[in-house]
Length: 170
Image (tube, rainbow, N blue to C red; front, side):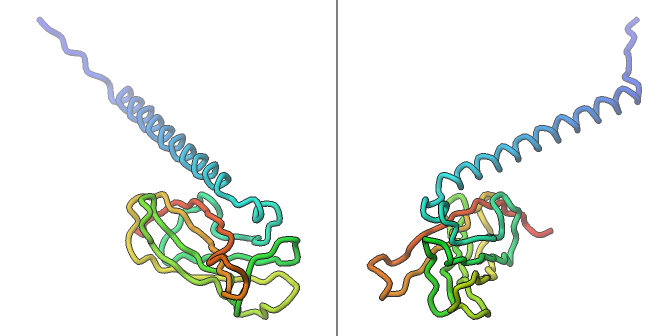
């Protein structure tokens, strides 16, 4: 005679709770590892001149932030420092968003409604609508300094790259 032992509901419930905790811990560790990797890549991409003088401050979104469309980008240009960020006709450059495959997700010009011909810091904003759905959750936001034709031979100047995470709207 063969006797089959069954697990009691109490042990089954304990097993399910333990399993869910393990899956949750795995997701948490993987997500934090991705954020750390993206932040490390972000730090490597920072141009020395921008990192040292901090011409752009109060940049939003921050590295690793979850974003959706429309995306609002805000920066403060503080040209009271030794290095400068080019501002021309109330514009402080463009914001370009791309996914991990390098596909353009959106772009928008950084503009201000404040008086921009001043010695004090000025806030610039842009609102970007995504033109396509990103191929992955990893995004890169590039804030690119645009130089006017009479400001030098370069087409564009400094670039700041910020890694972000895409979260689809539910």
